[in-house]
Length: 373
Image 1 (cartoon, rainbow, N blue to C red):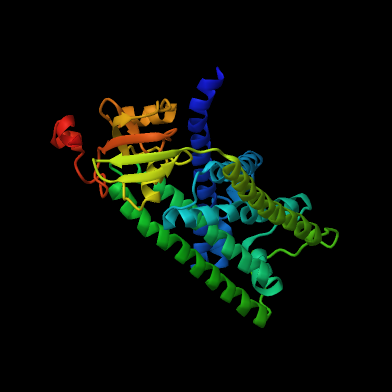
Image 2: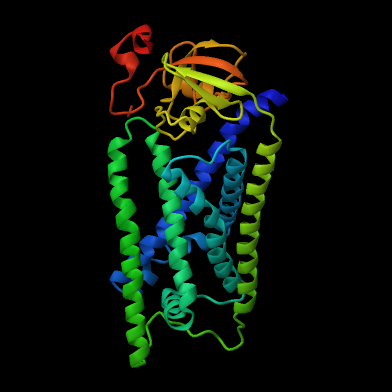
């Protein structure tokens, strides 16, 4: 594979890994939330379902996949921040960016704690876990709630953005919006009800059926777990800060040219060669269709190039695939993937700024020349 072909196909591999690792982590969190929601029935019900829900992830194969997903998703997220030309974006992207920074340290602390306890021969059921979180170390229980909430918000935001860029996903999204609210609410209610049951048992001296005493010869490595989890959290924060500093240095040293954008024969917009055409529109407070928020998936930011003073860079493999999939007309480019090198570029928007997949495509209602007029 040549260097040029690698540069053209690398974004596709990165995107695939990021999507599938994110889906794997979302499945991990979803199964745990469903398991927690069974606390509305009883702690016994939580333990009965544990082997099929949360316990499923403690196996050697799923454990390796979970660790690989955590690491790859985190570093690909940092890479996306590093190469991003601007952090000026919509609210959903900002929320996803901020929660994404906390996904790995929060999830890693949970995974590290479980694995280290298992290595020490400590087998915790839900009765033991609820007792630990509600009676012994409430701060740790609160951290687990925060962890699940942050990861859930990040995962569902990413899932919605991914599905929103696909046609015929509108009806599915309506159900997912409902589930995105119901699942965490029921999980928190189940967690609270299980805690209430544990508090009552603690006050009355009742021993729950699934509560197992830790053998005297087993040393619970709480101090080591605390040290390792602190190292993971601080290390993740330092990596995030390092990424932002490196990004700032890269942008400071980067030489740019002025770019003048003209869309649909309107007024001239000043941009730079560091920004994609879509970012240039947004920088000038000009709305432009982009259902996938500039990720090169939906094709709705496509423009027809009328004239460019400088030669434009060739489309990447990702851009070519998307343009082909959406049936874009000849000469079309994705504004989110096209970064002009300088000079004046005149384009015609193929889709209106408020376009959604519920609307008919311009090519379906008019000839290409009429749709671009």
